[in-house]
Image (tube, rainbow over all chains, first blue to last red; front, side, top):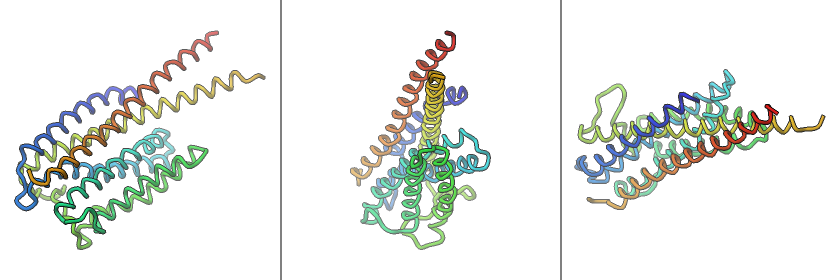
Length: 233
Length: 49
């Protein structure tokens, strides 16, 4: 708790600075694309949101595995708190994808493998949020949510490789971990700034929510202890 | 700048959605901290009696 309390202001400050640099650079100083024109600037929001939709779900699956295997109480709380934030970033990814798709493809939505697999991810997040709150006993809710999160993790490689496995309208990956990026350096830098900034923001939000959840659990414990102490006999 | 409405809407969402989550998280942790401090003090006082 003390470590996360000290970490959050630094994460939040770093996120604000990096997002501001990335978005201002991307909006005003990075070049327009020769084919897409200025619509390419949507990339500086869409790509970080898409990365965090998948990375957030991977974190949710890891917390679920920790919760199921080692019964770590903090892993349960972290998984519950990652869900809504991940769903928010997935919604941002889908919305900005639509806003990018309309001027480029002439359609707000196409049932393309990449888009559909990300929509499935959004429903998995919503399912997790609903399931962990659906039981009177929170521990049963955490277990059910963890199982759903682990089964749903199969969607992550499908999202990643959908553009290779199927013929999609969505473009293939421009940046990979193994190869050089197929992108002009003047576009790559603002993209890296905004991606890192949004990642720090995601971490700061999840840490803050988890700290609040820990405190709320302690409040419930204290209230129950006080109520049982006041009971006669 | 071409396609300006699409770009403006994307940037607005890119600021608003994470911004709302951040503000809500900081308000929630602040409320939890105040409530915990109040209950903790009362519990300690009760235990001392």
